[in-house]
Image 1 (cartoon, protein in one colour):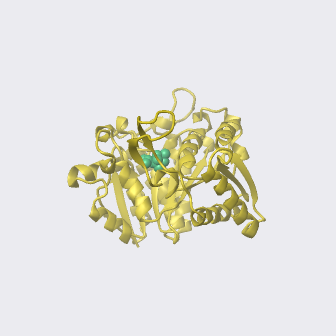
Image 2 (image 1 turned 90 degrees about the vertical axis):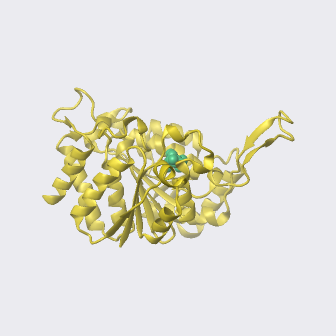
Image 3 (image 1 turned 120 degrees about the vertical axis):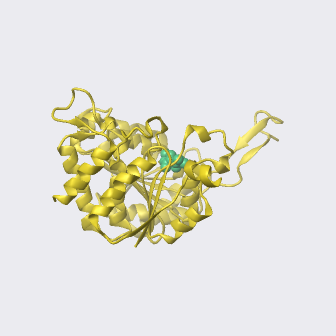
Length: 363
Ligand code: IPM
Ligand code: MG
């Protein structure tokens, strides 16, 4: 097994280092190779996703990804910005199925901005289509308007689109995931306004009727879904949606759990090869300070063990170790708050990672 390690920018290097410690203590005989990606790769090689990095990612069985992006690259042309590295990897590797579980750990219920009773025990799974929609639709660009409200004016445009096979394959992923959970899918669309999402709703309905009559399917408009997520998040099980809505709703769902610093993600291709990354970004404001929470990355490694490497026992061990470390009271800044929690201790990135490693050695 070969694992590509792509730490990226900002806190990416710090959090990935902790996940690598965890990987090492598991002693899986996996080979690892590290490469630059994002702004770091741009600075070294002039491109956020250099040929060598892409080659390594393609050759590997799985990819552990940190985060990309920094304000200092905001002025670069779009094709050279760090974000293009992750978008390029998703596209080039065909990573169309994005799993973003949002789990509220009982130890962290207080950290949510919602009332504890609304989030205690929360366990939802967002399944986001990741290689289509307005993110990748062509054409896009700037031009002079020929019609609209201001003909002759400068304008910009993007294209929202989904083909039938794109919707079908991600619908299968969502329904199959639901069968392993509470058998309930909420498909989120904007069928009342958008052609693309009326089509989405129609195709999802057809896939459901043909193959998954045993799974409960509900359709919900995205604005209502955004509201219901903060009103009664526990009413959801699998939240299934397109690329753009999934981007927005997954950040919202993340905050319900208290901290985006806790949330892992997996992006899989049709053969379950995958890229694993924390749901959060590169956080340049705290980069290099050793205070970032490495748990989302460590939990992403657990998802890798389960989905791609066929090591469910090792995955469960890592998750249990994280749970024990939280129970022992260790908290990075994002999940710590003054005075509200007895018997907790504020720790840095490396101390948190070391604690998970220690818990694994003693399990
Ligand atoms: C995410 C991020 C990315 C996205 C950015 C970094 C391109 O926000 O993974 O959710 O929009 O998909
Ligand atoms: Mg996002």
